[in-house]
Length: 309
Image (cartoon, rainbow, N blue to C red; front, side, top):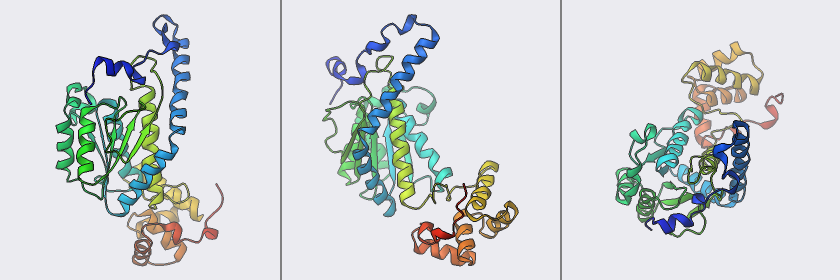
């Protein structure tokens, strides 16, 4: 569905916000108050879509269990948010960078500099999907606040033809531009403080949803133990310290003992935890983790875990 002036005028995110009509002549504090009050609508919009977000998460969990991927597709702010969420998954959850990917119209240049015209070609979105050999094991999540972005629509249609599960995240209701979507998440944030500037409430609501999708999916596949990131990649001093601290928190052993145990586990925090609680070798711990599909909560007795916070 091509965007026309009439179509744009009908979009919720293109309406003028009555609360910010005189924002250009207000003092700083009043401008901030208006923006802050309007941001509450981002949370309300997410609240109304929890059922749809749940469906999207279930598709992603199934994809991950089959060895598939989650691939975000977007343009402008939407594309940057997808790339951001994807890039955070490897250090936080210890996953391969291919597992969650972000595609942005205009490529890597568009991450730092606007390449607005890049979003106008559905065939380019479709080509990105073909280039990644998307298949039935994958989930493709298209992000388009306006609901009309041709690059995103083209990518979702190609993904659907390849039998991948598809998710459409938008901020405008009642759209039929992507009937191929298995799940549509519509975040009705309302008119932006600056008319049409979807980097504001629409971007905030979208970021909340992406956080929820990947975080919940990673929890479900065992990347989190209690509320701790036990599959993190300790690639810097901060994360090395966090690994030792988590081991101390859960087991009660000293930081010095935690250091030794993590070294024996070849740097893998999950392995170190299983070695401690099951009193076994690294090889035995890794085999147990493999047998339980990475879910150490199915290995470690809950009553043996240190309860202090």
